[in-house]
Length: 134
Image (cartoon, rainbow, N blue to C red; front, side, top):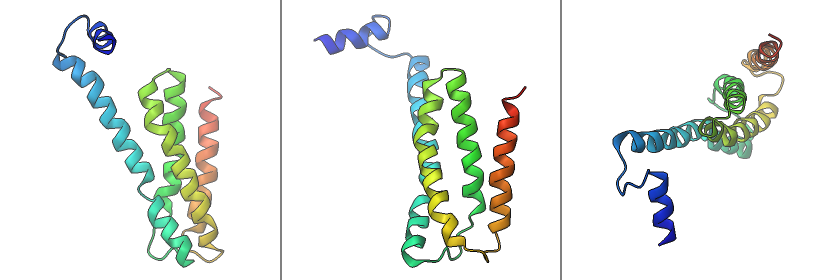
């Protein structure tokens, strides 16, 4: 079977994976799942808040911080050409941007965390841009 021959060729002709090979595949794959679960975790709560028209007890600051985290890791993954890091963060970039885009109008002008989120977003963006100047 052609598929089995390809898999055997990838494993150096061995029918079984060594522990190092298994960890080299399964550990990064679990990292991809875990990372994306983290980035998508706030989205259901924010979408529910959009339906109700109020953020309620949802703290918007961690979601704002995640924007910079995901873009920092995504830029690093692209810079070092690491597909595992890119896969761990590219879907998450969409999730955190969607969370922020839905969350920001719900904050209005009177939300107590609005200025902290704005400062974090702008300050983090400027810090990220400064990293590329060196």
